[in-house]
Length: 479
Image (cartoon, rainbow, N blue to C red; front, side, top):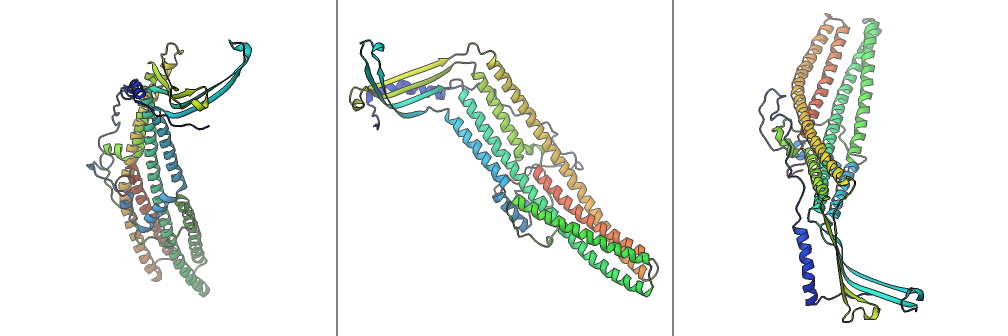
């Protein structure tokens, strides 16, 4: 069966004008019943007080390309953003919610389609008024409007706004996932670089201790040293070997962790520590607490969720008012298919429907109360997101400040230990001190140098935590 498009004449268009006007009025004159949105006040202090009363001013935050200074690390982050399966799944979820919003938004417009139908039926004689059996046929073709709701009280508009805010919340939450991925790659890379530095130091220490053990062996054979000195030297060598194996394991495991984060196997990672300890910018201006409201994606996502719950209240309120829907058809109808498009077969139908709730067992009231409660929950979640963000920045600021002072102290301690080793060795060779005191000085120097490397790494990781807590990595033209 085939149909031909129906051409409207001037009379038909004049008759359709009231319908079109009514549809337009329904679309344009809907009044929203959602409460006016007011952003909740931020339940945090107006300034950071954790860091020595230092005054802060609002300042733009670096994108991750400006924060990271190491070229190899930059390449890893770019690979991670392009290949991470976890992040890819997050982006696909955003696209799914975006499509859902498109479906919801389409409900605000009439669904007009070309329609065609045909039917044949036989009516028995005892059911026909003429007393004879008949076969009847009906054919229709034209343009139809299917159950379009006039959104006079913005119920559909409120639901569409809810879907929009849900989409924006999901999209903004994806930015949080992006920041978390960037921060995790940086911190894992820092851990690997630290392990490489400690491994290189341990290997150097092992070589030095093996030389000392060989010297002790010669002295033992000559009878000029004690068995205790020899056992101490053996213990130090074996300790260094064990530490080297532990650090080798740590390097390999961080390699695996980076491969998982980046989503690429067989990464070409540096086999030696970075040429500089500073892999990132070493100073960050946190700005004012109020800047978190625009920088932190999780806070912005919580506000979009709050806006969605606010719009839901409008939809719940609209359920108390009449609902008007329209169904219409304009085209040709005929009992014979061959006459369907001949003159005089024009037909139309217009079926408005109104529904006014009278009794629903308290359903509408309960739905409105539920919508308001969910709005209040969203307010609490929004305020909690701000408080968590403030606490994370405060903790990061404290960590950066105290670890910087700790690193300075440990560097001084390491320098002092190195000088103590030189003095102890000179006294041992001069016969002033015994060998055990010299070995003890070596142990302390090694431990202090390892602690310095670990503290330096912790300080840089604290900077990454601060960068993440401030919402860095997504804003600006570079992100």
